[in-house]
Amino acid sequence: MSATHDTVAAADTAAVRRAIASTTRPPRPGPASTALTFGWRGMLKVKHVPEQLLDVTITPVMFVLMFTYLFGGAISGSTGEYRDYLLPGILVMSVLFTTVYSGVALNTDLTKGVVDRFRSMPIWRPAPLVGSLLGDTVRYLLAVTVIMVVGVLLGFRPDGGFFGVAAALGLVVVFAFGLSWVFTTLGLLLRTPSAVMNAGFMGIFPLTFLSNVFVAPETLPSALEAFVEVNPISILASASRGLMAGDADGGQILVALAVAALLAAIFAPLTTILYRRG
Image 1: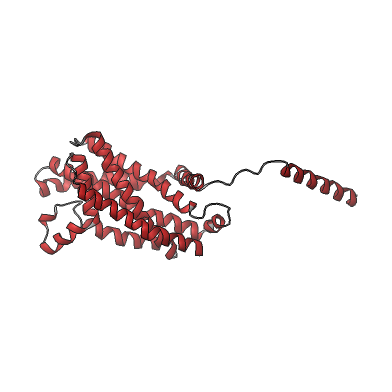
Image 2: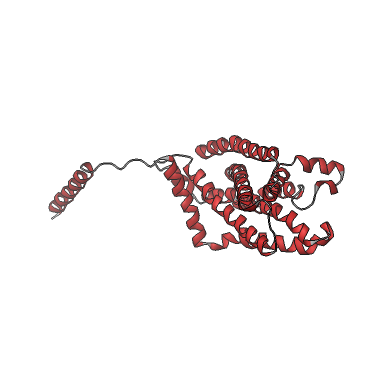
């Protein structure tokens, strides 16, 4: 009986091998397709845990409403005037805060052993990293859409029109993509997701509040004003305001793009090296 069973098993194995040998091997997926697949993975995580979107939906709305109606009159003398100044800044702040979660998500995969599985797959090695950031880009777009809808409902009417607003949103998303690489590096260096989150916000909070997101630099002490003027987040916020207002400063836009490119050029290779070394 055992000999018969072994013979049948061998015949089945041979049949499977012939079937495989007679079938054309599917082509190995390229970098773009693998990166998009991992980006879609990020979207599926949001689908199953929609609470992840609270930071890009509820939180920015709270900031807009509280700062406009609590401090607008005191800062600008008019809530409407302050709303027009604040909204592009809140847009910048909300998207940049979201970039911290790129590092948190990567560290979560690392500590759970998911990254080890990715490393064993015959795919383009940086695909999980690039795909994750592409998925986060959808979160950025959702955040800016929510903020702009709330702004329009509150009476915000950008003189730059649709194309000015779209250009401002694109600029902020590109800058956020470059900044995300900083936090993915952090996600590979630190040992727990909570450590990545704490360290990330410890860095992004001071830079955001020491900028022109909430108040004009000329209202600050001279030493602080000098720092705010050269802060890349201030430059990004000013460029976004200019694009929405229809009087964009080309120099500010170029500086914002250059900073984003510099961050990506430094931290993307560093993240990839750390990811490969594991």
